[in-house]
Structures are given as C-alpha cells and as structure tokens.
Image (cartoon, rainbow, N blue to C red; front, top):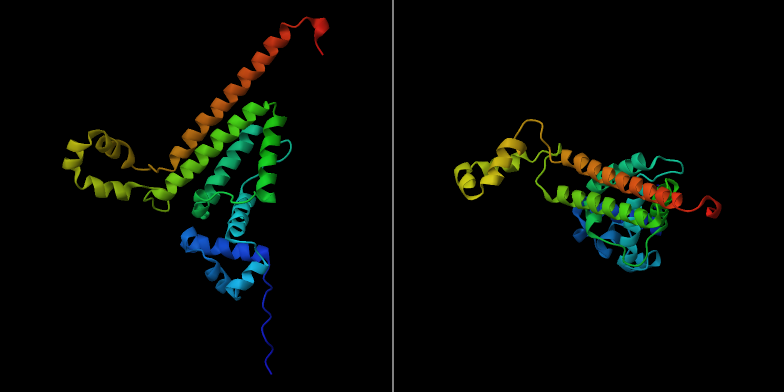
Length: 237
C-alpha cells in the first residue's frame, strides 16, 4: 500500500507566506480568503483557525515586506545606513508592488516595529534630535515609497527604460510638438537619448534628500554649540 503524502501543517506564518505569493503573482485584488484556503489545501472556514481575518493577513503580509528591508545596525554610519535602507526598500517594493497600496489595518507586526525602532536608534546615535529624526524618516519614506509607486505605474521595461512608450507617443511627433512642445523636447533631448533610464532619477533625488538632512543636522549641531558658548562656563553641566 502506498504511503499517504504528509501535508505540511497550516500555520499563520504559512498562510501569510502563501498570501504574499498569491499577491505577487496576481496583485492584491486577486487575494481572497477562499483562494488562499485553496492554495493551502483547506476549506475557507478552516482558515479562521489560523488567522483572525483578512485584515490580519494583510498586516502579516506587510510585516513580511518590512522584514526584507535593509535594517540599520548599531554603530552604522547614518548616511550609508539610510541609503542602503532606501535602495533596499525600493527593490523590495518592486518585488511586492501590492505593498505600496496597503497600510496596516490593525497593528504593525514585530518585524515592522523592530525595523522602525532600529532606524530611529541609528539616527539618534548619530546625534539627531528626535524632531529631526522624525523629519528624516518622513521625507525619506515619502520619497522612496512614492518613487516605487511611480515606477510601478510607468510602462518601463526590465532595465527601467521608458523609451518604448515614449517612441509610441513620438510617432505622432508633429502633433505632439505643436500641442505639448516642452514634453516633446524632453522626450527627444532626454528620455530617448542612449543610456537614459527613469530609475537613474532615484539616485539623484536620494542624494539631494540625504544632503539636505546632513545640512539640517550640521545646522542643529552648530546652533547647539553657539547656545552652549553663550552660557557662562560655571553654569554648564
């Protein structure tokens, strides 16, 4: 008699990993409790023994995504750590584009909280005030996630080249040049030039932001030193 196959037990972690795989393949709109249960080889109602709700699954999926981001470690130089984190976040979101459009429904998971805590710790260890830490995280996350969303919405080829779509538009070059001369000029003089890829814009913007954060930190340190200098030596602690 042939031995029956041993089925891998269903757990919350396995259900969430399967949900990530389904969303990666078909987008978040394709994910349903019934489809997830089928993927796991169980009845839909049995899924609720392992997860509380679909919102619970979505929270877990986001936690998986955060676990894949580059997380700063104690002693890391803040600028290189923030650059690594930004580049990693962009790369991970390209693999899981559905994650850009969803937010935590109930509460962030341990990977999410641990990642954010480490980012805060890295900036604080570098001498950032708590307000400047908040500013830095906000502007970096807004830029990186916004750029990832833009990349996901553009007709880019695997190299990040948008030229193919632009060439289709420029096939109507005469009408394009008359109606939208500045767009036509950008297409010809920039986008259709050899070697151009939209993804290259990421590094330019990230450098501007990191330069700005560094300048803000330097200004804060200089202000603190100036204020300290004005305090009589005997009153300094």
